[in-house]
Each structure stands twice: as structure tokens, then as C-alpha cells.
Amino acid sequence: MDRIKIACSLGEWESVIQEALSEVSEHKILQRIFKQDHTVWKEDPTEITNRLAWLEIPEKIANDANRLQSWADKIIESGFTQALLLGMGGSSLAPEVLQNTFGVKSGYLDLHMLDSTDPDAVKSVASKLDPDKTLFIVATKSGGTSETRSFMNYFFGWVKDNLPDVDVGSRFIAITDPGSSLDQDARSLNFRDVILNDPNIGGRFSALSYFGIVPAALMGLDIHKLLASAVETIQACHIEDNPAVQIGVILGKLAKAGVDKATFVFSDEIAQFGDWVEQLIAESTGKENRIGILPVIGESLSTPDQYEKDRVFVAITLDGDDSKSESLSQFIKSGHPVVEIQLKEKYDLGGLFFLWELITAIACEQLRVNPFDQPHVQTAKTIAKEKIIDFQETQMIPRGSALEPTAETLSDFIYQARPGDYITIQAFVQPTQDTDAAIAKLKLSLRHMTRLAVTSGYGPRFLHSTGQLHKGDSGKGLFLQFISDIPAEDVSIPDAPGDPASSISFGVLRNAQALGDYEALLNANRRVIRFDLGQDVPGNILKLIATD
Image (cartoon, rainbow, N blue to C red; front, side, top):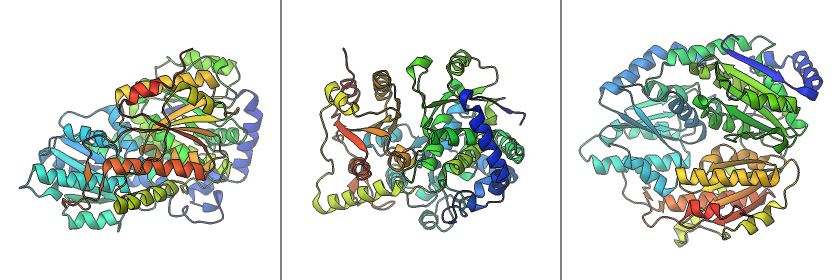
């Protein structure tokens, strides 16, 4: 593999990993994966045999790249200058990586993303759009994702209100599975285009399918080059001794031994890749009440003595970037396992997407779990739906009990932590730079206090990512849930596209999702505490940080 190079420093784990690699070779795991043999993971083929098309999709999309590029150029010629991607999890994370890594080519669509049900977040995105120049991309595999459908209903009405004389459907395209509810509705609403993805691909494995490549083409990326990197990587991965097998075995085997916190380090230019790989790993490995692999993203590196022995460090850097070399050398000297992956250039993200899909599949073989299902994602959704039904019957906004944020209360909760645990901050609030900064300070404080891995995510976005691991792993997590006031100017969600009638708002939906996840965590016997941040979200987060 010429364009993606790896180096692994395993210390005391070297012999264990070599033995595991020999077993993988003996059982022909790699060959069986490429033959789409479901028994690599489970005897039951359910949600496996119909989830393996990611192994072939890059080559199929590469053969379609010329047509796709011509299609994107026609969209540009129609006068659009902006696009808003409405999607959650696997439908939006890969495009977000590409947009933050490459930006937008001059003359192509300035891509925005919406994956928050916070009312202020919805209003903030809408304020950045020109209704006459915006193409809306509705992306959902199942067609029924509640957040995505709510976004679609809202913005369909928003366009209708702002441009009463246009064919609203002509401003929308859909990316979905054949026969989905969105496929049917998009056609009845006269969408500009309905792009049907291969149904045999799960959302988090869809980066190199139309879900990732259509937005890339609309941003003006060189999709031929991106897909060529992926195809080259696939071909290289057919060879038994390849990086995906090695890294997959390392992560899976170490996790079973308690080294289950995969701490990622990136070159700044490709740091956004972390959000995509976080979902891929967490949602694939954290299930059946077994040890999963916790991806730790965006953590500022400290000295080795600040970390317990449950960490494996994974550095993904661009050729020529040695800014992380000194820190990595210190971790290697201290005995921490370190995996280093170097890309020749940014377009090798195409190959990196596929590499990590295969890495994750192999790690799950080691953990003996199905990488393609997500049994605990539905749990929180079901409870949230019940809260919404209750609201529609009683008009009482779901909120639940929550505590006033104080450092003492948090300290008492964190006292439960045991070696090998982790802490996760779940923020059902508007994502802003000030809130980002406050959460970053809190994470650093918690790490200094406990020496544990600390992660964070905004709700409901994380529910489609790390939420599976939170409720499905072996119970190592301590969870801090943040809620905030519904803004005075809430945003109504139309019951149907173009219909002014509304039985729920985004504020109510967000509250129901927060309460649903809280109760799902309790039902899974997880340790969780809720803080009500009121109106001053950043300020009240900082109250949780001990000052002495």
C-alpha cells in the first residue's frame, strides 16, 4: 500500500498480537470477509448478509463518477450556490469530513449541515441560507429517521413561505434506499432528483457510496481521485498481510484485554476525520454488554504519566507533518501501544475511509460482535417517541428532573469512577463556539481529576454515533447529561411538507430525545447524572469545574 503507510509499536503486546494475527490467517478471516461470509461474525446472517456491499461500492461508484460529475455540474448551472444537507450519523458525517478537509471549490455549492434538533441551531442554519439559491439534500437510508424528516418538513415549508411562486420540490434532492418512505414521498413531492443508494450498506459504512460522494461532487471535489484512492486501498487489502488486518487485530485484541480506549491524534488538516471514525467504531463495537472500543477524539495530548494503561494511541497524519512525533515517541517509550498511519496527501482520505471500515469489521471479529447492527439505538428512540405522544395528549413539555450545576455535586458523582472507566458529556444544547470551549475546559478538568478518558457529544447527534456503545458496552461509562431551556421563540415542525399544521416543535423534540436517552441509560443500569444549564449554557458548564 504505497499511499498509506503504517507503523505499530506494541511493546509488551507484541507476542500476543502476533499470535492473534496467526489465528486470523489460519481461519482465513480476510478472505471470508471479501467473500461476504457472515459466519466471520455470527452464525445468524440477520443484519450481516444485507450489510456487506461496502466492500464493493467504491468500484461501482468510480465507474459512475463521470455521470455523477456531469449531474453535479448541471446543478451548478441551474443557479444554486448553497446546499443544506439534512441528515444524521452516517448520512452526514462523511460529507462533513470532506467539507472541513477540502472546503468548497470556487463556483460549486457552499455546503451546510444540520444534525441538531435544538431550535436555535435550526434558526441559525436557516439564517445563513438564501432561499432562492439553496439546494436541500435530504439524506437517510431508511427514509424514516425522525430528525431528518422533521428537518425536511420544516425547510420545505420555509422555502414555500419565502418563495411562494416556485416549485418547492425542485429545490430538493433525496438520497435514500429504494422503496423507502422518503423514496416514495420525494417522488410525490416532485423532488428534483431521487438518488437511490445500494440498500445493502449500513449508514456508518456508507462514506464511499452516494451518501458521501454526491455531496463531494456538489462541493467540487475531485471524486475520481477520491475514489481511485479507495479502489487502490481495496485492492491492496486483498493481500493477507495488510494494515487493516494488523490494526483491526490490534484494536480488538487489546480491547478484550482492557486496553479499550483508542485515543486518536490527527494532523490538523484532517482532524475532522475523527468524528466519522468515532461513529464507525463506537456504534459497531459497543454491544451485547461486552467490552467495546471507546474512540477518544479531540483530546489534547499530555505526558504519558497522565494516562492509565487502558489507552492505545492511533496517530493519523499527513506526509511531512512531524508535529506529533515527540509526543508519540514518549508514549512508545512509556510502553503504551501506538499505531501510526501516514497519508501521502488529503485525497487519500478515500482509501482511509475504506481502511477503517475493514479495520472495524476485523476488530469486531476479534470481539465476537456483529459490526453492522445497532440494537440499543432504537431504545432511546422508542422512549422519546412515548414522550412525544404524551406531549401531544397533555401539552406538557417533557423535561424530567435535573440538578443545579455545582462542582461539589459533580465531584460526588465522579467519586463512583473505577479504574478503566470513562466519562462522557452528553449535551442536548445548541452547539456554539462558547459551549465548545466550556466543554473542552470541563473535559480537561475531569481528566486531571480522574485520569480517565473523557469524551463528549451533542444530542441528538451522538445518539446516532456513540449512543450505541454507551448503552451496549460492558458498563464502564459515567454519563453527564446537559439540558437547557427551550428558547422563547421555539420552532414548529410541520406535520407534513408544505402543511402549516404542527403538533410538535423542535424544542419539544429535543427535550423528548434527551429524556429518552436518560431513561434508556438508567434502564441499562448506567451511571448517569443530569444538569439543567438553564439559559446560560457555557457559564453553567464552567460552574462544574472545581476551582481549588
